Each structure stands twice: as C-alpha cells, then as structure tokens.
Image (cartoon, rainbow, N blue to C red):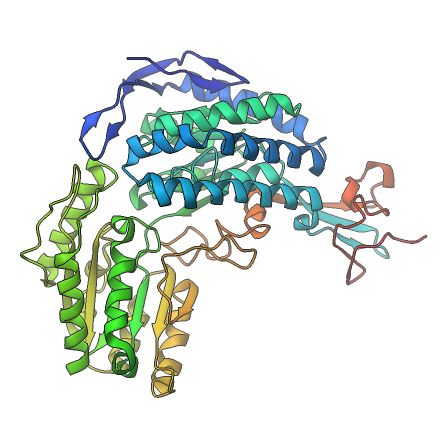
Length: 527
C-alpha cells in the first residue's frame, strides 16, 4: 500500500494530512491498494500561497504561451491513454471502450486544444475601446481558481483535466484542483502529466496544483480565502450550496453545477407517429451509463390516453428486461435508493416492482415510476427529487393545460425537451408549453434526448437554479466558459504603453476581434 503525495508549488510532497482514505472498485466493492491523504489547512494554505505567486507571474504570459502549455498537456494525456483508461475503469467501473477510451478521453484532449485556441486568439476577452472618451476595457484573469470535479466524468469534467480546468487556465489563471474521492488515482495521473507539461513550457510552478480531499471546514475556508479568485464546482446540491454560502459570504464568485431532472415532454400525436421508436429511444437514453449523466431524462410528461398507456407499458418492459449497470459508488447507490423511496412515499407508483438489481457491485434495479399530473401539482417539490441513476418518473397529465401548469412548477434544469409530431398536429400544444419550459432550462431540445453534450461554441451547459448557481454562464462551450473565470478591467486615460497589449492601438495578434468605437474589427487603430 502506497501513501500518495500531493502536488503543491511544482513538486510532489508528503501531505500535512489529518487522515487517509482509499478509493473503491465499484464493480467489486473492494478497496483499491493506494492510500490518499485528507489534507489539513496547511496543504491548502501552501497551495494558495503558490497559486497567488503564479497568478502574478501569469499576468505577463501571452496567450500563445498559455496555449502552448494546454496543447503540450493534451499531447501528454493522449500518450497516457492506456494508464488513464485502466485507472478510471478500476475506480469508476465505467467501460474502457467506448466510454472512456473512445469518447471521454478524446473529448478531454479536444477541450484543452479548443481552450488553447481561445487563449491564442484572445477574442474571448471582449476588448472594447472608445477612442473619443479615452476609455478601454477587457476581461482579464481573476486569480487562483479552485476546481472541484464530479464523480461521473473523471476525464472530461475532472478537476485537473476537464472543462472548468481548461477554461480557467485559458483565461490566465492558476488552478488548485480538488480531486474527487471516487477517482483519486485517475486525477493523480492527470496531475503528473500537467506538471511535466508545465515544466516543459516554462509555466510558473504553481500554475497547476492538486490535493485529494479536505475536511468540510477547510473546504469552506479554501473557497472563501482572500487569495482565491473564483471556484468551479460540480457535484451534489448539499455540498455545493455549503461551499456557495462560504464563497458568497466574502463575495467570491462560485460557479456550480448541481442537480437536474431534465424534463422531457412527449405530445400525443408523436406517439401515434412513432411511439415504439420513442420508447426505445427514451429507455436507451435513461439507462445509458446506468443513468449517471447530469443530463439524464429523469422526468417525462405525457397526456393520458391509450397511446400513452401503450408507451408506458413498452418502456416498463424495457426497463425490467434491460441489464443493470454498476453505479459509481456506495454513496450513489444509497442516495438513489433513498430518493426513489421518497418518491414512492410521496405517491409515485413503481412500474417495475419485479425488476432485480442483477448488476455487479454497487447497483440498483432499473426503476420506472409513475404519478398523475394532479398528484404532482399537489407537491411538485417532492416529485422533483433527483434520482441520479438508472431511474425515471413518468407524469401523466390530464391535458395540455395541466402539462403547462406542471412546466410552470418546475425548478431550473440543464435541459428540457419536447417531442412533437412531424405532421404539425402537436404544434398548438407545443406553442403553449414551450415558452414555459424555455424559462426553466438552459438548453431546449426538440425531438432529441438530452444525454449528449456537444463541445460546441454554441453549447449552454448551464441553466436556472438549482441546475447551476447562475443562469448566465455555461460550463461547456468555448470561449463562453472562459468568461466565468475573468474580471472586467477598465482603463481610463491610461498611457498607451501601460495598457494591456489587447487594448493598445495595434492588434496584438492581427486576428483578435475587438470592439472599437462601436464596430467589431480585427484591425488596428489608426492615428
């Protein structure tokens, strides 16, 4: 058994620990061999000190220099593919192929390269120049960013490899990564490669640091420390809101991705058109990855009728007969079971009571629940408990008016979807429901399940609370995601040679888009 070290100030060092922990293999429930430290405040303080020093140094780095680090790191990640896939599979039970090796790892390296391109181009900083008033402004680095990664995407959302990390670095900030306790070994491998890439490209030694776990009080102290610039967090609502309270108390921006049930509305005529195909599509989407996606369709709204009953029966059969996957951890298994029990106590009917949890390790039977629209409206909060995993709740409304009322009662979500007939027969209902749903979700889909999140500049992976902590920002989509980790800096009558390079008369790259006297241009300012 090896006690792993933490990465602080450019070196692997023994932790000033309070205790240790071990990760588990979810498919066997057995502890993995390595031991990891729970850091004391001394580790956090040392990381913050190094990050603050790195932040000062990074202000003089060009976008090209930052891009070179991100690209070198991406190359090294690809070179360690086999090690990363093996470790992540052992720690999460996610399939080696296609999930980890063929989908998530390429997405991760691609995100880093997209972030590099944004840093090199510089247009993300929204440089704005008013030559008549002598005022110029742009977005600039906010300072050290603490990133808390989730359990379900060890690569693409990882604290030292994922979207928050890439955005924070591309915006010019050092990162203190807090590994998720479900996959500390995976995070360690990423940290090893990040350190080598940083050294090879001449980055400040504190640009990337990593600790595995802290006590609750030290976590709150970390996000509220005066040296912290901002925080990115993906995880449970309870822990996220605790950190948010600590950050809010001292005015630190914290960007949260919390819970989301991602409502799907299926209108009557589309069931007549392709009900069997929809049953297959929904069951596949809901059970994919054992339902452990933040955009998993956890709530389906339908209008009662014979075709609805046929759809419900078909989906219930698919849930009951589908293989049961492995959940990420004992905690996920326990929380899923507790929330499903709570939904049934509130009045939901289990349509799959005979389904058995015949999966390996931590698992729960595929579960499909049902409740009437009127019952839902009597206690909408209870029926919106997130059952994170291989489960979903069907809400059978009396009519379109009731669907609209249910949409009005929903909390904020990452996504919302409406399926309607291609013939146009559902258009009137769509026009009534869509405006309500639109205000409850970050991304609205038509005729498409929400589980895929494309890494596109137009993507919004965000939404109203409690999906995220703020509806105006996205965790996926470059360059928009960089804005979260920046501050707006304004210069009034500042001498030209003292301005940031992107606010000087000459365009620093020749390609950076800037707003000059009300017009977007890549040109220089002429005398």
